[in-house]
Image 1 (tube, rainbow, N blue to C red):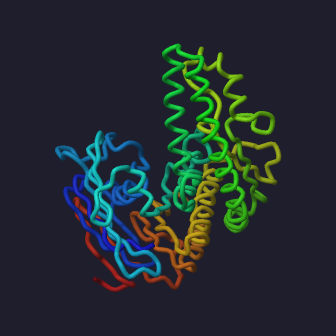
Image 2 (spheres, rainbow, N blue to C red):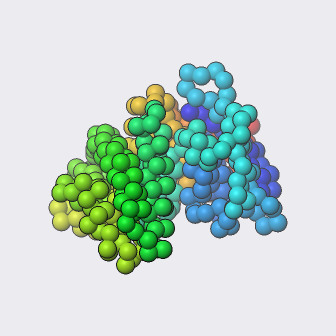
Image 3 (cartoon, rainbow, N blue to C red):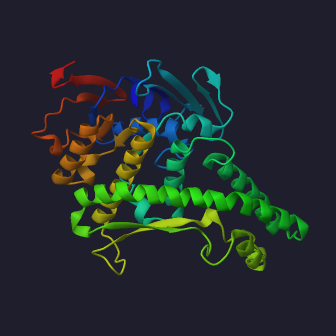
Length: 372
């Protein structure tokens, strides 16, 4: 995928801004606080329905603006027709359009554009709670599992609806036949949903092993371990829900099931699952994201857009260079922010498109090393 135009209004420091990224490597430079990261946030918002910094209402909308508005135009590999998507988000409500048509569900809009983002908070994928890791798996399945009723997205929606209904019954104190019905619905959707997640992680294992061997060889081989959210090797989900019912009544919510799923990475050089340093956690998270991008490319025949926020402050020169060489060799479109060009680019045969952000505006500074 290649983004050809990104337009944003009402975004943090920007009243209105437009940028036309080039193929391959794009650098977005500027002083600290100039708004470089906000541009990647806007792209992430279109692809995920949220900023990587959190919810839209938590400061993404410019002071005095009613909403943030994002328009993205991109080209898919092998396709002549440009695709276009627009999103208007107030922080509470949203409206969206895709290829000239209104979009009823935000997920349908997000499914169109694939962006993999690495930013200073990405280490939470490894060190944080289970939610970002579930989102990581589900993003991959969301984009690569195409099909009908038995595909991932319909199962995910069906399970989420059943979970919401079951939790409402638990909070109200109701039970009996109603809980039995929603237990059955959760099991009918949750078992195959879990199968999708397990198979996805198994497929990701090969990509992760290759990336981690190159970028983090001192940690040894990387092994993904899936945790389905209940004792799946011992119990069917329907039985697990029934056994947990009284505990769930006391808690007021469902304590077992795919919504509690998780995964972890075990390294052979850390046999007792020693805690990773912050630097190791960042590198591990990046390995996971690159592995996911490679899996996407293998299945879809094109790379997602790669957004790397403040790469120079997150990784040393050696790792910057290895990552950039890997990405540029495969032809992915890459957007990198920083106060200056990453040191890892020094000596590389790269011809980046360079933009500079200053005082709420962005300008094309260089194309292939020449003034634009």
